[in-house]
Image 1 (tube, rainbow, N blue to C red):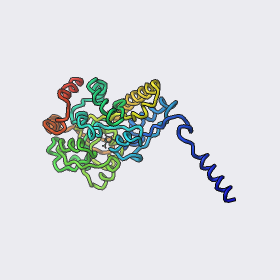
Image 2: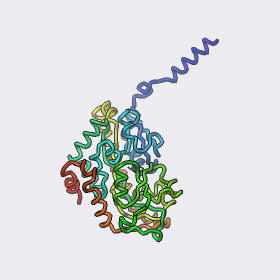
Image 3: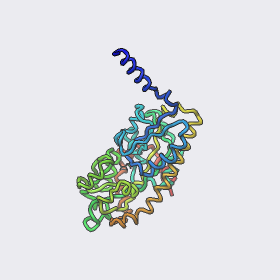
Image 4: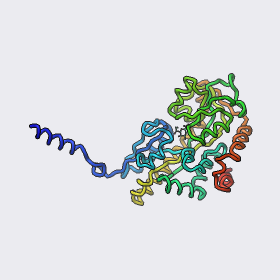
Length: 330
Ligand code: KDO
């Protein structure tokens, strides 16, 4: 009987073990992001990207940094532990410093400018390098929005018109050099912290504020634990749809074209949704009792730009690139 039991156990476990390639011949696309499921980029990928690739791929999103911690997604794709992410230029700049140009304050002017830059030949060497050296394809550019300074203090307690007004303010910024530099360039005292920790940090007062676009302030409910938004628009922020080159290379040319089209259409759909939210949410946030106002934008722009001139970041930018980027704007 012992033998029989054993034989039985073996056959049961063998039956349970079906290699992925036999279980179904679809490729699984694990996507990891610190963003929530209701973030417009997440929604666009789930509702526009996933159905278009469904014939040959199963899209498997992981939200709120639950699979891979914020900032480690690209190396996970490189090592084969992840197939997709919503990557930032700041993350790419940790591997390739020249990407910091796309993470620099007051460079991109709006969503259309981001698209023009991403589709311009100036982007080709950037995309190629990421593909060759990291095994990651940057498929399309997504719009995150205009980042603004969001503080716990009310406007009566602290009115921010100029960078000097942010002196000593502990501003949470994401944890990489390019982000910390931007926080300092704004005049604040930047503190690195993962996105998923911001709400608690704001509610306990371990930071004075954070910076993100209005749709994120609403989606992550930061308005519950903050009192004002200073419309600095210091970074018209973007993300790239990052895709494993190893997986891409296993797809047929038709499947590759489908993935590319699905990514472009998801990015466009998410962009339109996010732009609409940015417009609508000012009144929503005011209804929640928040102060929302414009500071002296020229003062912020001049101060931020002056910090980058002569910086280690600017030293990594290819000659003439900033002019080319500016020429693609208004
Ligand atoms: C953030 O950590 O503040 C940030 O906005 C940085 C972005 O690059 C992006 O990763 C985003 O978080 C997450 O997707 C959560 O919205």
